[in-house]
Length: 326
Image (tube, rainbow, N blue to C red; front, side):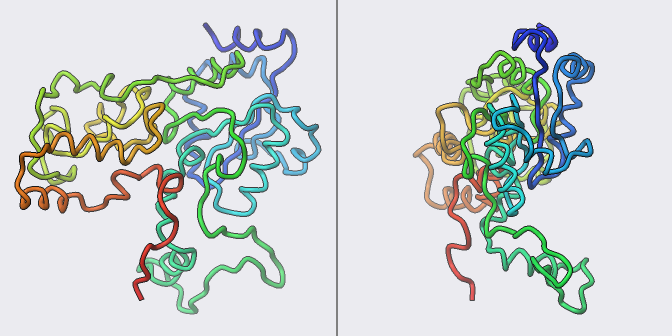
């Protein structure tokens, strides 16, 4: 069914009011909407975009003047890293009937959430004082307020949308792949907030026929350390998050010869994607290995947080350094 007919199911001749906002993110989620191609015209023929500051000249005061619950569906992409991000999230929650966390940054924190493993001071020192490519002889670090300007507060840690306001639906992905977006829009325009596949990526993996019944792990290799032979990445002893990641993307990364890193988030009913993947790895390793081999396997994983919690650090892991290095 086309998006246009689905929009008409919503309420006859009434235009659906849609809002889109970006918080802390790269902008890829806004661009991903264009992946609908000509179907976006079906949507725009019957839906009105009432707030999308990334693409059009909307002001915050325009949003403030809208009646509460006057927006049918609001999509919030990006994490919440500044005071401004948080204020707009709360305002959209007030103005929208349905608030959707759009993309990995909003749903789980994504790559930028890895900064939660450090303090705000650590981040500013790394970016402005210790970065070899930054010339900053005067050692200037940004301030929130000067004599002439007041900037939004850079919050101590990045938050997901759900950690700030109630979220009605979530669309995963970095950014959400077009099939996932279409499925989500079709559901939302019919008043549904549950959608998406409920199986792991391995079920739709383009390499699934090459996965052997038994996988032997001696150590793990990073992508650049071993030539890819076209078989299941786990069978090649390369970490692929497929067993712990929700299907729906069609294995886009794997089709490009890159192991899954988990941007679609966990399989439904699984809360912790990282521990789910660690459990899968433990089952592959088995019990019949000596202590030395076990250590070698563990030591070959160079970055546990960046590997198993690349997209969900902000949602699942403790914030800040667990041990002061000083």
